[in-house]
Image (cartoon, rainbow, N blue to C red; front, top):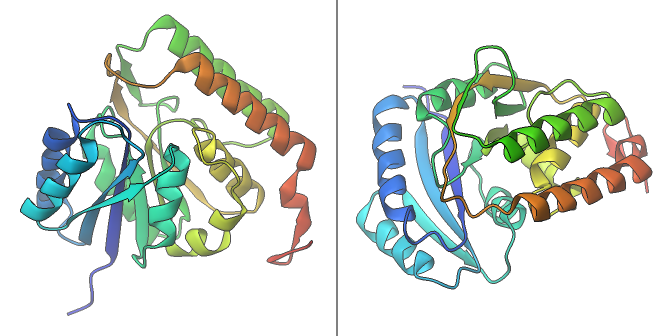
Length: 249
């Protein structure tokens, strides 16, 4: 029998004691049923929580097969995702938000696309066929404005930078991830901008997404960080330093 590809699903968490247990159990049950062609692991990546999140994560790791927990002493979603991805030897690594705002039925198609030659796979709320429910006016305006800025200034084609529903190959971890400087919310955008500029193939899965009114995301603070990150990339244009697969100093 051919060896199954391996998959690591990272759940970055910060002060999510109210949701982490139920949602990790939901995810584990779903993967067990709908991804029989993969060997999979869920890694709960706690980034400096001050509540009982990590304690709960450790309990889940003890009670549920294929669930792991790691703790970082510094905050940052990007930092947590990068840490687990870079320490994983799995064929495919991914991450999704702990609130499971994106319908899990899209996940098998997302990760399987990476076995068909794609390098990066993303969920998108902006492509034809996507469905978005419950997002307030402020988040809608900032999200649409943000992707418009990215496409105008960087001449890229992907349609959603911020959806917390992504997967990449091990090759991307080795070759692209070391070039990503951001450790916060801009991590996603930097991954996609650099990835498309460097010629990595990006698969987009239109998703059904339901807003979580209890989300801990701070829209204005996140938007400021995103704009600063865009300015950094626009002024430094790091993709120009790479020629023939080798980064030039």
